[in-house]
Length: 186
Image (tube, rainbow, N blue to C red):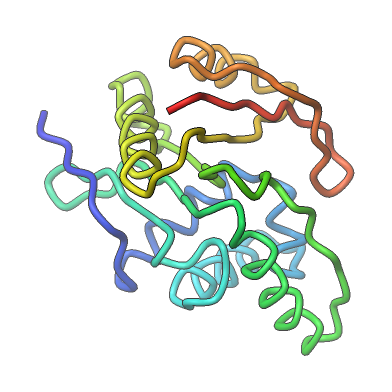
C-alpha cells in the first residue's frame, strides 16, 4: 500500500471537509456559524478553498492512496493562530455571527490543529504517518516543539499521541469544552 502525503489543493476541498467535521465535531458549528450538517460541510468546504483561515488548503496536507484522500492534517505556526482566527471571526461577523475563537496553541509551538483518518482507513498506520510528517515539517521550520489538543473522551487518540512521545502539559478549553494540551519536543 503506497500512501503519499502532499499539500492539499483547492480541488480536494470536498474530500477534506468531511474529515475536518469528523475530527472537530461540534466545534464546526462555531467555525461555520451553521447547525445543519449539510450546511456545516458546505461551509467547511468553502473554508478549505480560502487562504485566510486555519483550515485553508494552504495549511492542510492529505494522505492519499490511488488518488483517494484517506487522511488529513492541518498545521500552522502557533504565532499565526490568532491572525488566522481573527480573519475568520471577521467573516462570521459579516454574516451577523459574533464569536471569539479560542487560541489553541502557544506562540512558540508548531501546532497540529486537525488530524483525521477516514473510517475505512483507520488502523493502517496513516495517523502515525501524518503525525510523523507534521513533526518533520515542524523541525524544518525550526520549531523545538509541536503540540495538539485532544478531547478528554478521545482516549484511543490520546494513547496514540502518548506512544508517539507527546505528553499532556496542561488542561485547555476550546469553546467551553475541556481538552488535554499535548506537546512533544522535536
